[in-house]
Length: 329
Ligand code: UT7
Image (cartoon, rainbow, N blue to C red; front, side):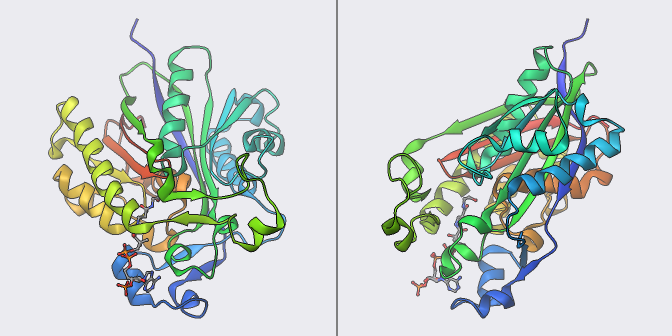
């Protein structure tokens, strides 16, 4: 009997309707469209504006799209893994709230915190559940409402981030399609460059932490940029090498959308032409855990069974990694 692998068998996505353009940001902070476009590649991002709405409200429609496409009931889902750094609440897990809103009463689930690499970490975890043979239908959703933790008076962070959700369904495959390899890395010494200062157990929320704006994302952009360029390019080249693949064998690179210059450096290192690189950063900015599944969602119609696809990310933690998969449908 052939070995079970885990394959993505459907993709769903959701972005809020409200657009925040570079021109809108020009009115909010000392920046300009030209600077943002040339330094990051971003033109606009989506923002979940409605009060009382959180990450689960974007994850649910993304997963409902999958259920509709596959003619499944929510009760068919065995497990939901939610990659996010902007959970609805510190606890319970957003995965539980998503399951309740969907009516996925047979599913267990949990949140996974690995910032911009969250989707890769969650996909590898979900694949193990399928490969074990114990679970048949696992949903992996990457979602972030970054607008909830961004200081819109800080021009170094507010220009980059946006809100969105992307989800995939993982099922067993016996044709040697699906997730073939994964390299995941983390290095906590990078935490100082990208983190949220307060609101955790070290520094719980107080009036002072709120006044000091310590509940917003803090980033030392240049330092993160340097590590990101090296980390994402190294790991993407490594996964190609250890699977004996050349650029000609790769159909698509699906890079985390943090900065177009980081994406270009990764593609160059892999020897890939730009036509093989999924890029939607200009429309959505950096949606953290959602960038990679949102690309798969937008490109789904152009993917062919058997395509070699490399997913690659770098983010807060530091966390980084790459996944090699063969598209299964
Ligand atoms: O996704 C998770 C991981 N995160 C990342 O991968 C992000 C990595 N970092 C980056 O993408 C880039 O570092 C940024 C886009 C955040 C910043 O771009 P940069 O090219 O590294 O800019 P910089 O911080 O070196 O700043 C260059 C100049 C500075 O002015 P001076 O000192 O040269 O006069 C900044 O004050 O640009 C200035 N600046 C801006 N100017 C206009 C910084 N932000 C802005 C802005 N508009 N929004």
